[in-house]
Length: 553
Image (tube, rainbow, N blue to C red; front, side, top):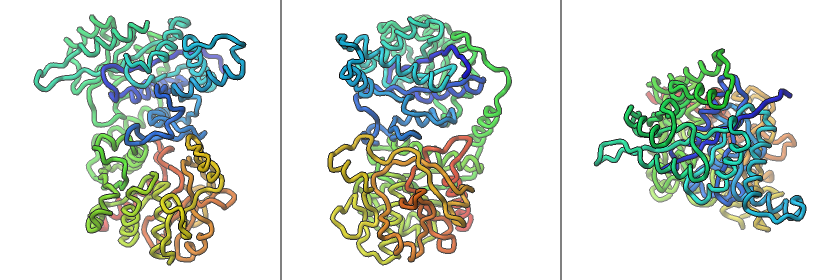
């Protein structure tokens, strides 16, 4: 293993949350990786939850599942997509996880009888986790995003850990602040004062930012850069303007236009490659497609996690959204997504005919009974009307329920998740989950992470993947009930992917003789879709949707 002297880049936020710390951290990691450095990324979430698995997606956003099964924040998905790597649980920490480790160590006498204190033992545990992640990846650079904004009580111990690392290695640790510069509509002038206050707050933790990523609705002018430099004690060349743009995939390109990799290399004394990376050209080509594609593909996404406003959408189903985009871009199309509430089809059944105007319909994963009958109505309609369909996890399970009810003759077919006392649960709880549920051990206890799947020859699934054996990420407690599989298969549904032992039904589809494109997966393929490596299920779905669109003309 090559010997490295690692550098650490902490990304913190100022003024408001949600201005792009995760995209900033991802973009920094990408541009340094493209310059020949080995980079890994860490997300620190300040909440007391041990992981993100028990959080409501409408409040927190998508739960992103890593290959090793860790349930994490959605920013981990951004890291994987931008870096095109698989990360693991060493790259993710929460306040709850850190405290849990310290308490377990104390109970095991690993502190050798010392009085265990919040300071220094909690920051020391944080530092240890960061260094372990670096060692495991043997990374030249580690980007560490600290969730939330400076000044929040929750951030203090993580900032203290960062300060300790800076004190230990002053030339190999740097800080990037992502801060918002508002332009009040009634004032008409971009304001730097909120960012100035955020920097002063960060200073109170013993930290001085090296770079300011200035988020705003429009590019910074010279006057604003001068003011930020003077009052925040940051050189002008280290203030990067980051105005609103249409695609997050332009961010690395814009950072490079601002000379960010050169600035970072000077601060940390990094040696960057002068040889252009092949990925840069491919990435630039993708961004060009994003900006210039005119022909559209119209996809309806039917779910239930967006009733509180449009801003929730990009968080609750972000990996699904991005996976559709990647596949659309790969065939030169502009994806147009329409969000439909499943409950709306229950309250107004006549609305179902509106689905005919879409090129394809997708039902993502979810939990619980709300909107289930609406989703089943949607699946029945697209099945009968030959509209391309992709069902993910719950979307696959409900496709089995719909087919069992209306084609296989299993009246009352349902899932035990919503009708626990039924004798016709074609979707049942997994055997090893029964005791877990009885004990109410909900956190981190589902079937999680990557599992192998064997594909049947001459099926839609095998033609899309082009392989016999695949590996995909899971997050579920329920599965197809094998008792009903023979009856469902006899009626015409094909379980084209199963676990290696044949016990778990992983993919359900209808043959092309019955439907042009109808497939569902028990796993979550969206977690493995990448900008330059779209997922075959999504690409197949997009292509089928384009074909369907042409047939309507």
